[in-house]
Every structure is written in C-alpha cells, then in structure tokens.
Length: 271
Ligand SMILES: Nc1ncnc2c1ncn2[C@@H]1O[C@H](COP(=O)(O)OP(=O)(O)OP(=O)(O)O)[C@@H](O)[C@H]1O
Ligand SMILES: [Mg+2]
Image (cartoon, rainbow, N blue to C red; front, side, top):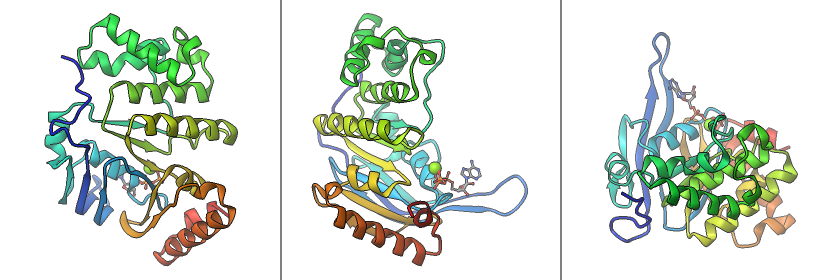
C-alpha cells in the first residue's frame, strides 16, 4: 500500500476547530486548563502562524490536531471529518516538525527520511529513492548516507523537513521548528521550507515565539491567550516581512493584545 497523496474527497483539507476545551488533571494537585473555548478555521493552502504566551496550550492543540490527545469538549474537523476518523482514514495526512530533531541516531539520513514511507509499506527501493529525492530538494543530497551525528543542527532540521514532506501530508504542523537554530541558519531554512510548502500547495500551521517568523511565513497570524483561545487575528499582506514599518506595527498590535489578555511573555521576549 502506498501513501495516497490526495485527500479521500479530492478536496484540499480545511481545519475547523469549534469551542475546543482541554484540561489536565495531574495525579495530585490542581487541574491545568490548556485550551479554553478555542474556535478557528484554516482554509486550504493557508499558512497560519500561531503566537501566544508560553504554556498557553499551543503544543497541546497540535497533539489534538494529530489525534494524540482528545478534547474534553468541542470539536476538531479536518477535511470534513472528526479528527480521530481523519487520522484513522488517512495515516500520514498530517506531519509534525518539532523544535528538536527526532532523527534516529543509528539510521542514515536516507533511512530516517524513508521511515514514514516504510511504516506505510512503500517497498525499500522506492522509499529510498523518494527519500533521496527529498534530501536533494532540501539541499542534503551529498549527505544521504550520513548519520545524524555527522550533520549540523541545521542539516538535521533539513532532514526532518524532508521526512515530513516525504509522506506527502496534506498539512504540516511546525512547533517552533526553527527556534533552536542560529538566526542565519533559521532564515535560510524558513525560506527553503516556504518555497517547498508553496510548491507542494501545502497547508501549514507554525507555532512560533518570533513575530518576524510569523510575518515571514504566515498569511494569517492567530494570537492566542492563555489558556489557548483566540484573542486576535491578523491578515498578513504579501511582502509584509520586507516592510519595516508594517512589521513594527504588527509587532505592536500583537504585543498589545497579548498584554491585554493578561500575559506578556512574548511581548517582552520580542523587546
Ligand atoms: N500531559 C500533560 N499532563 C499535564 N499537563 C500538561 C500535559 N501536557 C501539557 N500540559 C500543560 O498544559 C499547558 C499547556 O502546555 P503546552 O505545552 O501546550 O504549552 P505551549 O503553549 O506549547 O508553551 P510553549 O510556548 O512554552 O511551548 C501547560 O500548563 C502544561 O504544563
Ligand atoms: Mg509548546
């Protein structure tokens, strides 16, 4: 069985989050409210940046979008289907890229990138060919046989990006995927990721603490309060990242609504 690159309906996916609530009750102690009455939509081929205070439930939201955690109440639909049914129906429909790399240290770059295809039963020769192709696309063609320990942090993150694209997901979730890298490496990777995602007509959501990154990658910025709820939304016009004045005014807008929502961690980090 090969991964099916198309959604079952043939339509591009749309994410609909409605009145999502999620709390944790630790073994001892008080319960932690992670998501509170969160409602938003993601249209096909949207590029959505999510910013908000630390501990606001952003990563928990990604767990819920992947079906790894279930909501206490509310709903998440992807491509018109409840999230649990979507992930069952279409394994690999959503890929996630983390801040830290999740490569297996004993596998070559090729075998790491091929892992998702292996899980989906793609024959060895074909999955290795596809993996090498994706390594080429992310600029790691010469390092196909290298072990993760032989790659720099930026190169390892390139391999993670290749691994995410290799399964041809409908949606990619990036959880602070560029924030562990030095700024020069991060800029190049962001730009390369963007080029690939646009070429693949990929819907992506990125959680970031960098307002510059949100403006560069997002066509929409969702500003979360804590617990995760939508406190503000900004449409980012094309080319905004090159307009210093616009970047400053979006930054001020985000700072103001995060401060008004009661938490200003991100505002102070961006000072
Ligand atoms: N499995 C869990 N059990 C108990 N509490 C949890 C669990 N996972 C997350 N939480 C809590 O849920 C809240 C939201 O966590 P989450 O990791 O989503 O924050 P975040 O917005 O991603 O923060 P950051 O920007 O620092 O990554 C936190 O208070 C966290 O401690
Ligand atoms: Mg997080």
